[in-house]
Image 1 (spheres, rainbow, N blue to C red):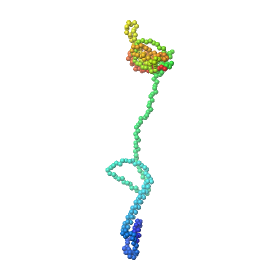
Image 2 (cartoon, rainbow, N blue to C red):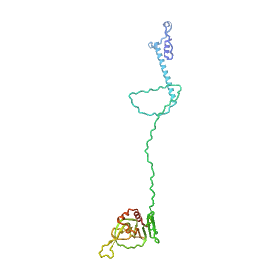
Image 3 (cartoon, one colour):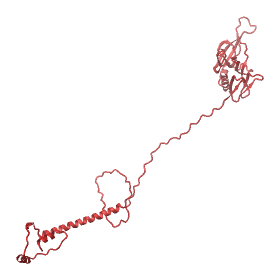
Image 4 (cartoon, one colour):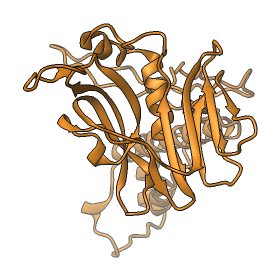
Length: 334
């Protein structure tokens, strides 16, 4: 074979042909009888020996085999990834956890993808069971209740008005008022037992007599709805009078004698409710339509009405006393 051709053939990596062992006698015959062509383009020192060419061909062939194997492996791996990505796994949320440091770290082996012609099943990753956060605790709120309305006021009194429409007053339920027969200006008040407990008059002509007395006042209060024709206020009062006199036929210079107490509970002008030595006065109050009088009726069979001043004071704590006082304080004029 021509040496130049052999060099060119040696360059071709795919032409791996066995080279015949040179025959020395044949070579010598060609040299002596034939024409040998030498090339001065490449020095003889650069001509590779046959052994070097064989080794070079072997290295090139091995590199090509390794490259082909690598390409084949890459194609197989890529096809395997394409098969897996065509069936995407469901998205899952993996819980995060804080790694716990330890003395030695064990590396986790990386799984090697094994290609197959057709995957038998789509890999399924079980989602971790997560516990939902506990609902925030809301403090119990006491149920709102509508405020209880106050009870409707219960009538505790009724009103009496005189026919002329001027004087009126209130009195407890269960009590009654009896107008005077044949007169329009007087009314007797009876309690729930039918006993006469008070008398009120309006439009009377006033008269009367009086004298010196010793007076003890136990209770007094201003009546809001009354003022006499002189502009004086009118007051409620509970008191006792003791008249002083000299017995008939007694010697000159005899000391006066005090009568037993005479209790009264009525309406008067303030000057008629003074304690001590004073005039007996009157419970008649002058109003624009005539004289007005309002008083409590004490039992005439009991003289005095209370056995002692202490008994009179004790009566002031009773319900009857409170009812009578409230009735007299309610008297008004229009």
